[in-house]
Image (tube, rainbow, N blue to C red; front, side):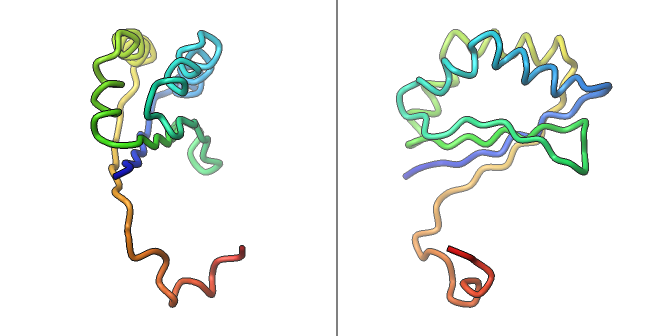
Length: 110
């Protein structure tokens, strides 16, 4: 069963965006995306909150996520979070096998 995780990184004076730039420029994000079981690892920027960055992660299953959390690069990522003094809020989602309810279909444009 796949797992989706939203990680909200918040900081001050653009530190969350600087963290993302360093993750991308250092190649750390690319390494995460290449990990076995990683289905998505993307950073998003909210127009309404320039001090928060959203990381959307999708993993094949809990075993893949556990492997990611035990990877040596997690130490580097943790250090970067400290350097940029980031605070995190995490949301975890599991798939809904029922799919999109008919009542919501009217709002979806395929």
